[in-house]
Amino acid sequence: MNVTTDLANSRETVRRSGSRQRAAKELCYGLLFASPVLAGYLLLVLVPIAASIYLSFTSYSVGTVPEWLGIANYKNLFSGADPFFYPAVRATFYYVFVSVPLGIILSFFAALLLNQKIVGRSFFRGIFYLPVIIPLAASSMVWMWLLQPDFGIVNYLLELLHLPTSQWLGDTTSVVPTLILFSFWTLGNTIVIFLAGLQGIPRHLYEAIEIDGGSGFHKLIYITIPMSSSIIFFNTVIAFINGFQVFVQPSVMTQGGPNNRSLFYVLYLFNEGFKSSRMGSASAIAVLLFLVIALFTAMIFFFSKSLVYYEGKGEQR
Image (spheres, rainbow, N blue to C red):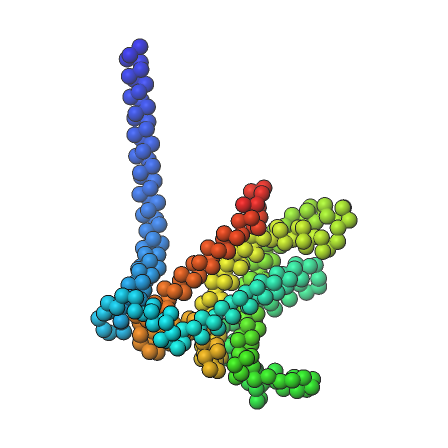
């Protein structure tokens, strides 16, 4: 009896040892194949983040040795010693909290229209997506000329219709709203993602609403929006992240003017680091941007737990 038990225990030990060896071998192969991605992430993401955090506590310019300052760079920002910090924060928050909700709503309803069975549907889908494939710097230049107050075609058409014209990018009150309107020019990606989500909604859910005598409004409220909530959530997160990092449009169209009204945060960061060569201060600005984006992303995730439906889960989470 003891011999049989010992033999069984030996076999179990060998089996477990073999399983551990196979698991270790699979782990080694997995790390080997993933090593290019891991190395790239380490060198291109983690190391720059760590370097930025370190440099944010120093006085540093390209070609010089960093000098430790402690939290002096952050004090200068929050104390108002830098006259551009708070205007950049205000302009960026204004842009983000107006352009993102409006962009999500417009994209969603544009996707609803493009999801209908109409003649030329593919053509209209292509038209909506076309601006995305045009370089943003090029389209910014084109719109800058179209919005010229003296000889731009937009004001010319408004005059023909006997409507009031505007300074558009040249006025402190209209420059940010104009850039918000221009942000809708590049909603093609968001529309395509919404469209893909709408096409994944099961048809039988709409048929059930129709059998119960529901209208198109009921379909929208009780089927389309709840079933698209995960797509709305995804697009909202991406839109907020991109909104806080807007750079090309103000850089090309306004250079932060007039009177710093369109000096958005990343443009301010660029000027501080590459035009003024204050890399230490620019690193502090970048660290604050990272924290703000992380905070807002975490808040969106937190408040979405009870609002977002994930297909296959059978319930909200």
